[in-house]
Length: 392
Image (cartoon, rainbow, N blue to C red; front, side, top):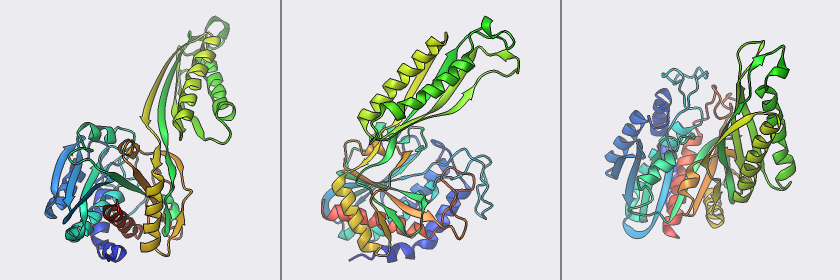
């Protein structure tokens, strides 16, 4: 029997050094040229069949086991965020205004460790592993781009797996949730058009600022009064812009924000009520309105049987771990597209260390994680792949 944790720990320096290199040289979505080049180099050195430029900057490697069997997809994201790093780490970003503030550097490095572990045992494997290194997860459509380039074909996976380093929980914690794990995500831009004028004579104009304030207030009723109390949704206005002078009523105001939900029927309800409220309130205030809604990704929903089996794998290879089967978040994940019609499981690996100050939230300028989580992530992913190869 393969000792996945021991082998992953034996690759710790390899994984850590790659992670730090990626961290020092972060690249935004669809710009991961250097990162993809390193990934392809490492996979080619293992003798795998490697395809580059999948979904613009994605990399896919195929590992054939020694025996026939199912096809299991394991996906790792590579992109960074447009954030100025403030960690002060010796391996801090060398690219101004760009940093790995969500752990994707760790995902990519762990994915390469998974490739090494599985390649070392390929003669024992029953089936095929597709290792997918995805660009542009952070709301830019990386998964959709890879789908358009046929990532789920030749061969088509039977099951899919992915994971996330999770700074909301400490090292030693593992989250494997049956059903919804991450929410659907939608983005909106609302342009409210009034009639500008002098601030001292508001009766001569149509004030889009007041209309915008009324819209924001009314939108809060969607979750509290339209969504069933036992369901979940979020409607958040994150930006309101309009006007520059203290004494001028502007012509327009623009609202931006995000909508999150888990169930498709709740998502449809929220989007319908959003449109009705924005248009109705704006017009009642004498304004015209333009609404742009963009669906970013559906909810990430774990296959129940797969989640139970991954939980069992975690119990076996990480017996000291704190296992959580209730973790879900209103954060979103475009892995949902790859799992849309292929059974999948998306799990979380605790990565925070409060004593070392490695506990900043994801997308924070001081985000960093305890690198001792890397072998745990690699081991659990490799072991889960083998679990579904052996007993698909």
